[in-house]
Length: 447
Image (cartoon, rainbow, N blue to C red):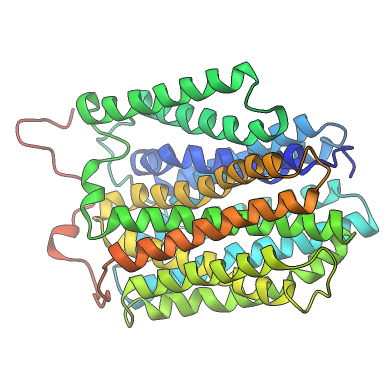
């Protein structure tokens, strides 16, 4: 490894830094898009992402600088993803076309991740890995230039609104610090004093955020009425636990194959290709199922798939043929993000009014990305407590994967017991959804 880091509890920042900021900053990005225009925010976020991807290509000597650059790139992505979802949600009324478009958008998650792993392996084998980030920056610049040309001009959906900057600061501080605590703990240990200090500060920030949003914010960045949709809270928990399990499986499959079975990044990228193929097929299937099958069945299938996948990975011996357990686990694993992400995104956008599309997109993006990063911190803590101080690394990996099993089974149980969302067969906006701006509460003005 070019950073000279061979301990997964330290290297965990390589996959965790990007989704940490990507997940935390989507808390506010949807609201900023509603006020200043979703297209404008997408383009600004895209430029930011391209610039920090270039910087990443120069961070070849230090894991710290590499992780920091990845975190800054994640901020750019945070302003892109939920606002694209909002543009889709505003452009297409509830119905087949919206479901298809969101399904196609969800197609990019597994396919993009798989192709990224594959091409990273190609660059490591035949050139230098820094050129992967340079090439991504070039492709990103082309993509966002095309978006600038093809997306029609738009007006703000809430042009008289404002952004709750105090709530944004408190919420993002809490999310970032809480995540840093859990991802840093496996490397430095919980006895380290600053771990408890940061944990306390993060909890205080969360409490202050809740108090501010409930009591003082004139236009909260997370309105409480978004939680009143049927089974919405249970849906959120299913998403969190399923995505945590999926993120743990992906990371520990990487370290198991590379550190225990001595696979090169190039071979790992090839081995992950079936993941992208299945993922690319399952996203539109999930979108097709939304008006035909109750949502809890779609979510349940995603949770079930990652549960079986984590069981296969946990029970495999240190050395084994790829086709025996890794291959079926890779196929099943691909079903989780597609069925969970696509179903949850469609349910969320169909559950709120037009002016809340950005907020719904932000909330789901936050949960999906932040959960993946936070789950790695939880798993790293389990690994560090079960690997006998690095002397039994496979046992540590299994401990982390047992956590993945527990999370997936919990998601499956919550979904079976509490998620009840009927088939969504609507075509077009409901009468009270036609307005793109929120109505002021009685006795309040919009100033």
